[in-house]
Image (cartoon, rainbow, N blue to C red; front, side):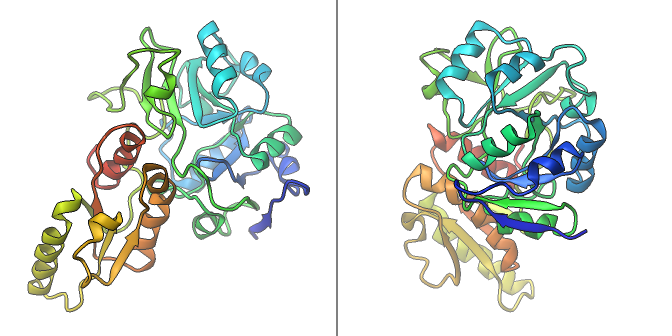
Length: 338
């Protein structure tokens, strides 16, 4: 299969993306969070292709993207609170998990659950595609399962070349992390996956909002990213505070030399503070100097470690406050710390 990559500009079209979705094909498209791999959410055969192409476990539910709030009413039971949140944060990086209307979607889309995660993306490329297709689109991140999510079209092409017909290139993703997933289907609302939209942002509507990002033993994953290893590069990832990066780097470099690796490739992902004193480190990626820059650059940095074929990745750990909660959620999963 030939994969076509087209550039999106507001005054132009999304190519034949809508027609492909209507025909049961897959289309990768830009959103403000990460690139999505879309299929008609109502078409079980089309959605099954997502799992096949990504190598995604079938019990990992998909988020359904819509362009109009009325579509939410057709798919889910929408509470007054949900409507208020939609008005306040849609389009935007917020996914709402709601009770599924019976028969609204095939089981393959929801991972067999009686709930569905709904989101209205903010990027004009995504909204135009959804409006032209005139159907709900199931779309996880457009990468091979387990790998770092794609924030550039080139990342999608690297994983999906020859597997899907079309990639809509909207440039780099502004947020850089997947959407915040908020569970409104349970008796007590909770954040199932943190994102750039934080509990503080939602406090006006849900004061004292908590998180339930870890899956109990034998528990059912009600949102993507809860059950399986995610965001991981090929090399092992170690996390440590900025002030310990130099010492940790030296220790592991020496151990690798002693183990027979002549020129160890240790990739360091950090802020300028974390890179202080690491002049001898050949492979460094400056993540940025504020939390929003860190979020935007994180997945590109993790993919870069694969590009250079790193033997080990040292990543700076950050305070788990605000957007730092989402950043550390991704880094911990990349390090295998579920």
